[in-house]
Length: 167
Length: 260
Image (cartoon, rainbow over the protein chains, first blue to last red):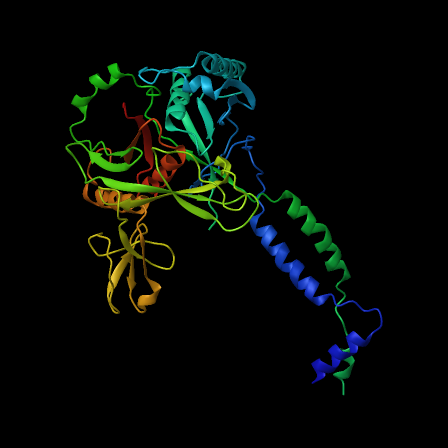
């Protein structure tokens, strides 16, 4: 009874705002946001026009490495467009070792940069790591040719970027 | 009588409110809702690109190797290893589109011979490739007519018996296994918790891979799986296969190409 009376009193106060429900809401929101807050931030950025496939993988990208993005229109290396995807498609299918010269040249430039950084002591070793972001509607043919080119240059440690499936 | 004093006592929530008003927008702005993660491809050292010459050199050293391979074309998924293949999984492909303008998702059957996307009944325009949300592969018979249906539980897990075979009927009191790694025993209490659904080839693949893993644990490459795909196979399918392989405890995934 005492409780009920107390409540009645508060609402009758002129100009008094009912903050309780808002507080409840904010507290829940705050807990939710704190829970999903990650201090690391995101290393990978999603290229435009690119829908990554969903995957159950929980592995987080840990270090910054070369990003190769394959969209329906362009192949991008570290966010700068290098060669139209159409060119990659046009490499003949029966080529046992398909390589795109423009992409290879660009990748070699980045690889040389990494080697230079090792020489200057900024990096320990060239680990040849790259993250490949591929549109989920891309056909395997293009992916294979891009991977083959990366491997040829020395980027053997390939990772695929995917969207983490919620649940 | 003393209690009356406390009736009027109120917590001063203003500082807490101030805190909330600052913290909530801050966290909201810095929140990332779409999380990007990565799939690690563990390619063997110095084998970035393997030409046909290199393949010819290899076979002798691979006595105790399993060479497990998942082969995917635009209508069949097969699991093979050294010395044989499991029966192929024929599949029909369904695409789920979510209209940009909002509204109900549309699921349509996809025919590889006629790859044009369907038209949106509301606007009369064709769906774009970006509206395609999901590619679903359902196992069917070898004439591509009937979809196989098996039991799924309410969590969307396939139900199998103790030997890992998919089942179509349960009775109250049966103990069945839900497809997770390791398989989880479920005692049937209520039959309505299970429903017959078209079986996804990814689930069946995971099931088969787990059986292979159990049987060939002593193989040298019992962690490895090769995914061999045809040229026109979509990347999304390959990622889903990788997921199935990873769940079935084959972390070392390599990729190969089927010459067609």
